[in-house]
Length: 195
Image 1 (cartoon, rainbow, N blue to C red):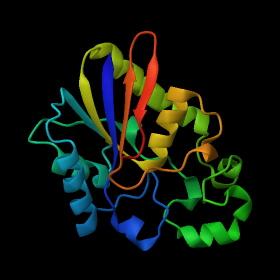
Image 2: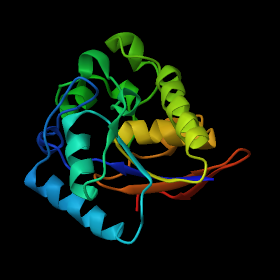
Image 3: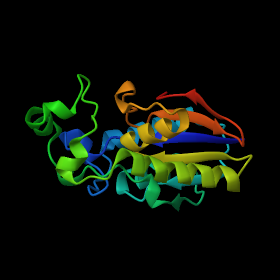
Image 4: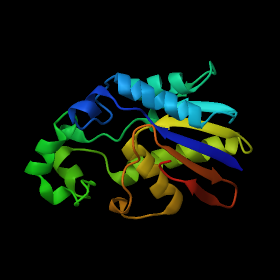
């Protein structure tokens, strides 16, 4: 089986400023975000990764560079953050205030907003991350793999893995949080979420 360690990037400048950042927003880590990445590296000490993959967006690339010890990182666009369409780059508090019908009490995004913002469907993006995970598991069937990605993308991975169906049933992982799951030819198993 392939064991995946999925890491959300550390705090970015947009996170700090309360900006909704999807695939089109590309800010660097804050100094606190760098500390978070190094704390995650310490938590992962002793684990040997056979392959490292990351989103090419700067906040994920920087997190991957801080966590790994000079191993090559393969960047894959399917690991980018979800594209929120015209909301990308807006202040989250403004979006929550103007469009409360698209959020639950925890500010989890509800279906239907994508028609308003010209964002891709959750299903389309979930299929892309599922294809990535399936390809890696087939190519490296006994590997331990580190993947550095984004909060909503991690939710979509878990929806693919567990067939959650409604993403409001799962909050986004915290910055630099660790999620672990295994994929084999006949099973997909979540081992830890947002550690």
